[in-house]
Every structure is written in C-alpha cells, then in structure tokens.
Amino acid sequence: MSAKEIVIWPAKVLQTATRPVTDFGEPLQALLARMDAAVRDAEGVGIAANQIGVDLRVALVGREDGTFFEIVNPELKATDGKIKLREGCLSVPDEWDEAPRFQKISVRYQDRDAKWHEVEAEGRLAHVFQHEIDHLDGRVFVDLLSPLKKGLIRERMVKLQKFLKKKSESA
Ligand code: CO
Image (cartoon, rainbow, N blue to C red; front, top):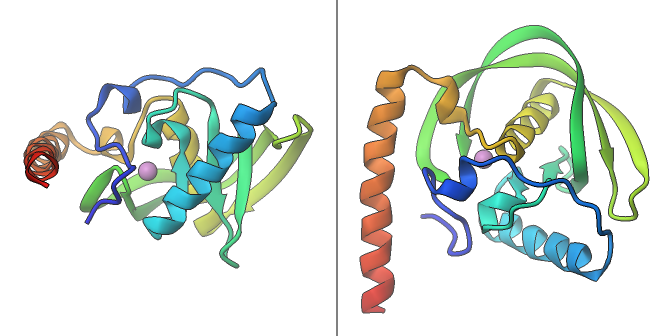
C-alpha cells in the first residue's frame, strides 16, 4: 500500500522539525523532482521532504487541477475559522481521522528560485497547506488526535514497518 520511497511514521525524521533551505542550487532542484515523482507514484495530494527522509523545509501542496505548489521555507501567516476534517497521510497508510484545522489561511513561502510569494487558501487547499507545514515542523495529523487513538495508530504502524522490513529482506 505504501509507496516504496515514503518514510512511515513514527520514524524520527518525521518527528523532527526540518532545517530552512539556504542553498537554492542544483540539489534543491533535484530534491523537488524526487518529491514530485514520489507524490505522483503514491497518488498523494501533498508531500514534505522529510517524508522521503530529507531534513529540509520543502513541500509540495496539490492544487485541484493536479499541479503542485512548490513551497520552500513556508510560514503560516494568518488563520481564520475552525473546522474538523477527515484526513490521512502517505506516512500513516490506511489511517483516516478528523483533525482540527483552520478554515482559512495565508502562507508566505519561497519558490525554487528563492523568490517570496504569499497565497491565501481555504477549504481543502488550506487543509493540505496546514498538513504539509505541520510535517515540516515535525508533526503529523496523528499528533492532533487523542492519546488513545495516537497509541493505537502507533502500534499498527510499528507492525506495518516490521512487515515491510521482512518483505524487503525476503525480496
Ligand atoms: Co502527510
């Protein structure tokens, strides 16, 4: 179920805040290409760099038309309204639950050429921005659930990781 390049929670890299990007050279362009391939392969609506094991503040956020915002060093600027939405995550396969999110947000971010942009989003798009920026801060949606739910999901993910490890060793 999980795409092969995606790191499964609770891996440490997913629980650690990523580092800001300062070098906008070739390695960043290559990272964006790898992330684009990984999110399309997994049919995701967004992906953060630490989900492929890279400790940098870079994410892709899916637009309704299937293209992606490339966001580097994003900052969540303003928020408005509260909403609970069902969400899942490529790093927490087959788990879905309602996490508290803001209805409207504003995000400041740099593009691959280091130019700053500001975008306002609401509804589904705002939701994906919050989910991906959370990843970059070392949080997943499971962290927003009750301790009981979080504990159960953690157990299932640890089992899944063991299963995937065995499978890769026997392949
Ligand atoms: Co996610």
